[in-house]
Length: 174
Image 1: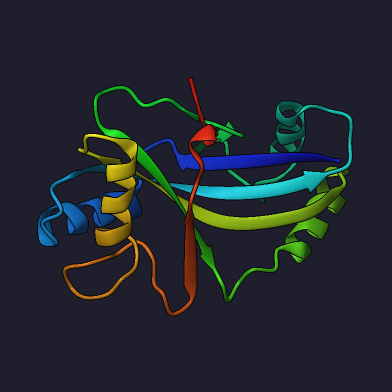
Image 2: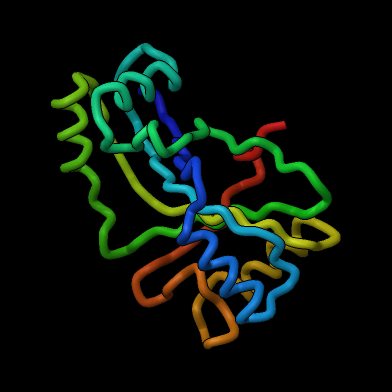
C-alpha cells in the first residue's frame, strides 16, 4: 500500500486566498501575516506499484476529480521551501461535517482503473509570518489567525464545524 499527500493549488489568482489575506492583514490588522495561500489537501492510500507521480498522472489524465491540470498545479508529499526571511506555517483544516470521500474514491477507481483504498480531503492554508522563529510564527497564527472567535480574531477556521492541525515542518522540502 502506498500513501500520497497531494497539495493542489490555483495556477492563477486564488480569490479565496486573496480575500482571506485582505481580511487578516487589512481589516483585522494582523500585519505580521505577510501572505496566505490555499491548497486542497488530498490524503490518499492506493494499491499499486507505481510511484506517486505516475499515479497522480494516471488519475489526472483520465478525470478532473482531484484536480484540473488546466488551471491547477500540485505538489506531492512536500511543499517547496519558501524564500525570504518570513516563516511559513501550514494549517490543515478539516470539515467535520463532510469527511466521507469514499464515494469519490469509488468513482475515481471506476473511471481511472486504479485502486484507491482511502481518500480524505482538507484545506491547507499556508501563512507567511514575520517572526523571529517558526515557533513564534506558529503561536501567532494559532492565537490570531485560526479559530474564528470575534470580528478581529481568527478567520481561517470555523470552530462550529471545522477542526485544524498544524502540518509538521517535514512537509517542507529543502
